[in-house]
Length: 318
Image 1 (spheres, rainbow, N blue to C red):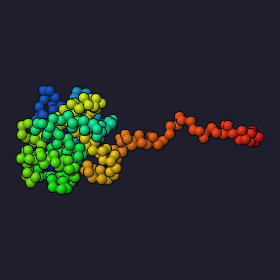
Image 2: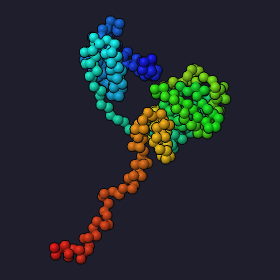
Image 3: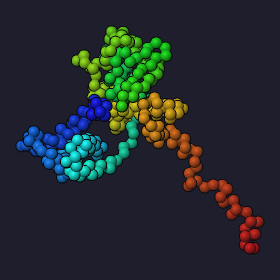
Image 4: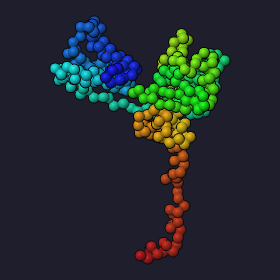
């Protein structure tokens, strides 16, 4: 996976975890993984494993499908390297993915994000880090893994300021920074002793090591909980780091930025991925419904013939 397919570290870890869970399930409570044979990974066993993910671990169908994708990938590899097991592999590869429900994409409006940032205590070093973290995520619309992987050397703070991301598939893109974001970065660099040419993690946790995507998620959740006092609607919303990426896309769309530019901004491989934001822009939907008159409203022109005596007489004479 790392050398032939050039998969990212997160993809490899996801596949590793999926196969680990499968082997532990196949071995059972008293069995040992080291004693398993390939025959133990039969279609009924894998099907029971997938069902247990939903019933015992309470995983969603999307997680179930991700685990199945890893299992399919392993058996595709098995077909190429060990064709003597081709028949078993083909049976496993025939296990279908489960249809999953598409959730409504959650995002923050600009006013909601301002409320979240407003309640961050910038008098502490951790607060200034959190404020910069969320500001940078909204400015760039980057994935949370791209944000926590940033190094000091990835930034250009002289005008025009920008940041370089290394996204999925090793694709590189440059994103411009707002002057306000650049000023926050300069202050943060000075406070942490970071140099733009040094290869040092930008965000660190309380232990001094690089911040993880799980740490970034926890920071966002804490900030959202504080912002509930100003925006009570946030309490029932499912906001996560990727929601800030959606928020950036919607904000750019409302600002009149074309879809092609937004796709390049976010690092989408295809502009068709960006089209989903058109369907969730509520302001655009409200503007569209305002232009269309309700069909229940009576039109003044539709009944004018009923009061036209000459027309009625002419119709009766036919």
